Length: 220
Image (cartoon, rainbow, N blue to C red; front, side):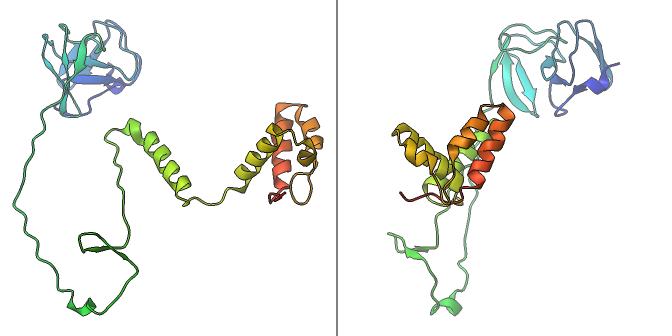
């Protein structure tokens, strides 16, 4: 009995998710039915709980996610070879809306720090909302957020990054003399570079010590 090794995301789904590697011939008891696998199903893959003809719809999360492009047997794994993406149509609905403006007379003579828009309205700031439609875009949204914060000047100062940038610039320009006395108070980086060659662990420790002893960047 392999009930604890499969998952149904929604009761309307016609596929089950393997939580562990399942094998051809395994018998899966789920609900009041028993399914026999006709193919290998690796963990996190899905298999059909019914026979699907070409064009049959595939449902996950309770919604349409794809369709069969080849006949799929009950207990057979779903792959990019026997399925393709498909979604339901978008249904647009517009409900009547009526807005009653609130009484703002008590604030008629009050002021706030804001700006005038071209249409005569006023605002305090602009908000950009970026909403990922699928979880795999979350990382991309964070990268986008970081780019805006850094370029618009909203990030906290990062002195160590500026120090590394300055070190790289001096190295590219061949200013070895300034490298040896980089920072305030002067820090002998060559002494650390000799330590860095000893081992990778010493490399990390030497770099950390070098940065810790160089809290500011020399203007020269």
